[in-house]
Amino acid sequence: MRNRSALILTTVLTTGALTLTACGSRDKDKGSDDNGGGKTTVTIGFDAPLTGDLSALGIGMRNSAELAVKTANKEQTVDGVEFKLQPLDDQAQPSVGGQNAQKFISNEDVIGVVGPLNSSVSQSMQKPFNDANLTQISPANTGTELTQGDGWKKGDKKRQFKTFFRTATTDQVQGQFAAQYLYQKAKIKKVYLIDDQKTYGAGLAASFKDTFTSLGGKIVGQDHVNPEDRDFKSVASKVKGKGAQAVYYGGEYPAAAPLSQQLKESGADVPLMGGDGMKSEEFPKLNKKAEGDLGTSVGAPVEELPSAKKFIAEYNKNYKENMETYGGGTYDATWAIIEAVKLAVAENDGELPDDAREKVLASMAKVKFDGVTGTVSFDQYGDTTNTMMTAYEIKNNKWESKFSEAYKPR
Image (cartoon, rainbow, N blue to C red; front, side, top):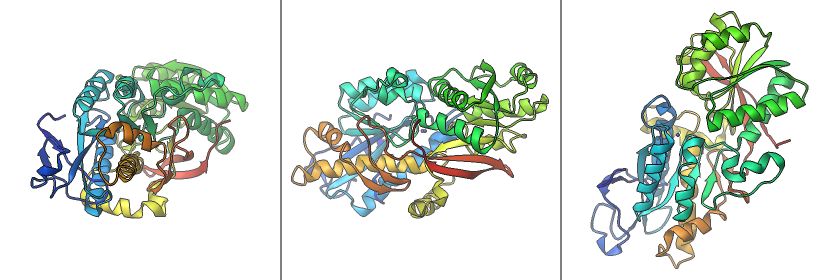
């Protein structure tokens, strides 16, 4: 989740050096410059919040995308192609994300974009990318409607944009999984429901509510908060008087942390549970009462996956910032674009086709590989076929995995 007009940050997806070079060129007769003898430059855009409250997630994402690009260049994954990364900061604001989308579109060397972090930001980017035939793949967008449309709740699923893919599963899956875990595993029957009114938070809370009540659980109260607020004493007081055994929060860690702390300080000594937007290493740092809080996240814990060992080692060797929740998924998302470029080049006699954006987009549906997070491939909506989910609990100020499964929507 993390434009530069004259300079583009070069990144290659299979192990290469990271360099800053002048705006990329597909002209092979310019191979004597910094992009390495005769190689065609291909730029991958990246968008996420690199400043502001959510920057910890965005920076971990950017670093992971950069590492994928470096790796691809070092290993020469696509013969004759040098990859670059162009990272832009959307500040978690849809308006900025829309501006960034236009910058990517106007740079003809950009053949795909990784990101963003926020589903609400993605909504401002999807149509422009679709109109430009520019592939977009997010490792963090979980809003179900982004791929399946607003009618998905009624079973009327329709792909919205042919250019949108993701390596994160949907809030339909995540909300249902959280509800089932809380009701069946944690044995919690009464929940107070809160969301931040944003696309991600509201969608996650709605999915949780539907499943929790269908299992027999009771929603004892419901509230909405402003994600910019940090004073939640009023809602904490309401929770205390409702007999809730837990609070489920649809939102992200900057607000979730003070909400959790103030709940417990008010006398409502119950766990706060949230989704992947809450499951950040920053959450316990911002919350003195985090012990026992619960969270879910897409995928299995990367630190427990044999497929992620090399990635983790290389990441820790190259970066001081935590990879955070979306590191492995971002690496895989970036690698998916690289694989699509590889397919497009192979189908064009070893040359990058003139209509590279269209050909890379067509290749995305065929992409399938063993990634950091497991097998990476996409269904007819552009959604990941990997529906692995994990429940976590804060133990000794760290997120500890409790239960994982490949969850299928009810």
